Amino acid sequence: MKVTSNDFTSTAKLSLMDDEMRRSVKQATTTAYQKRIDLMFEAGHAHGEALRQRAAQAKRRALQRLPDLLDQAEAKLTANGAHVLWASDGEKVNQLVLEIITRHAVTSVVKGKSMVSEEVGLNEALEDHGIEVIETDLGEYILQLADEPPSHIVIPVIHKSLTSIRDLFIEKLNMTPTDDGHEMAQFARRVLREKFLTADMGITGGNFIVSETGSICLVTNEGNGRMVTSLPRVHVALVGIEKMVATLEDFAILTQVLPRSATGQSMPVYTHMYNGPRKAGEPDGPDEMYVILVDNGRSAIFNSGYAQILTCIRCGACMNACPVYQATGGHAYGWVYPGPLGAVLTPLLVGLERARPLPHASSLCGACKQVCPVDIDLPQMLLDLRHDLYHRRAVDPILKWGLKLWAFGNRFPALFEFGGRIARLLTGDRSLKRLPGFLSRWTNYRDFPPFARESFRRQWRERRGD
Image 1 (cartoon, rainbow, N blue to C red):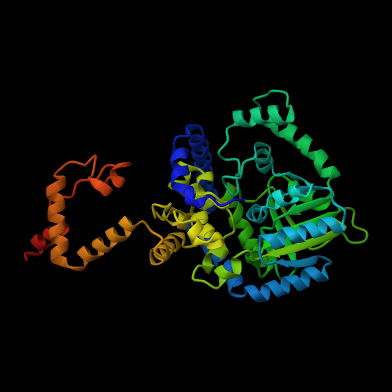
Image 2: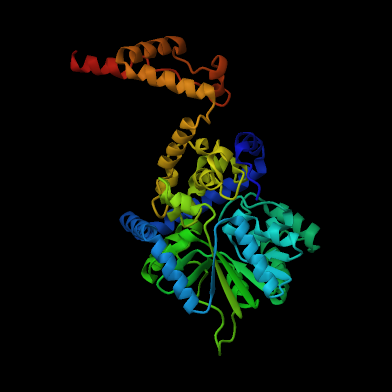
């Protein structure tokens, strides 16, 4: 997928004018946010917070032991009959999948939801070699028909209305016109069922890998994960190396907070654990199973000050809580990961120079940290990335010199107080609709509030009798 994150500002302005998209995103994120609260804290706030901290500890323990857990998982998966392959980057992932396709004479592929495959552009790579690839997650399938990327990592079609999906199905699939969402879903199910039954290969991601058992864990609501992994004769799982958890007990904790945070469910409809290919006497399952462990920049993050972002379990709760995401939608972020997660992860994976606006795509309200099921400090990482941008001289010169002037004025109490007096004199008692020169960038989108008639310093002195 092409990276256009440096276009965030201009793309966000266009998104703000798309009223239908904003309504759809706002409605879906608000509903998911409220459901999360209801389910996460159904046994009380203290219980919900304790569950959240236990989940955070499980992922942090796994991150601390990541190299050892990867070795253990490889050994277990191999013993279970799976082929374990390693991919350093996206090009290697696509090369390995194409080699597997050639080895097994594959002509058609069905896919479950996989953010890693979006990262590496797998669909495009396979289609360039004449391989039919069908997304089977309903939201991803809709976007494939529309030739659009996902705009949310859990609800990829969040930006589309029911009527736009209806029109797409009529145009692309010759569906009999209907406005009934249930009928539309049933129609898509019938179309996809034929693809499941005829595909040679199934490709999935993986929510977790349990290292002690070598189990690939998939959490879904549609059942397509089961179909993709059991009907085709070859199953390929693309899993980021950060998806390790040490034990089944840790997985049991994480599989409680994931659905609560993602969709407001106490449990997902389907939870699958795959250990290897079909064994003798088993009625279904693939003849061959390949697990590709994907780095694609994750080792560099692991060895940086941003390693905590690798504990993310891809629930999307930070997006549902983020006022910036709610206003702009996901496509404005210009790559696979939108919202607060994308504002941190995209610069780390594709390079800060290719995603300069994203660390600033936040009001730093802290809602993303508050809802994160593994308590990732996203606001602090956004600040750290802004610091990195500043020291790489990758910021607007006006902002750079403005910050220097602000820092200078705050260094001397008398100068700080004098500046406050001048500001009160200039603003008076009214909000300003327009500031002069480069300061107008603020008032292009908001009023400049008046300064208080009396400063805090003066009130403090008066109350103390100084």
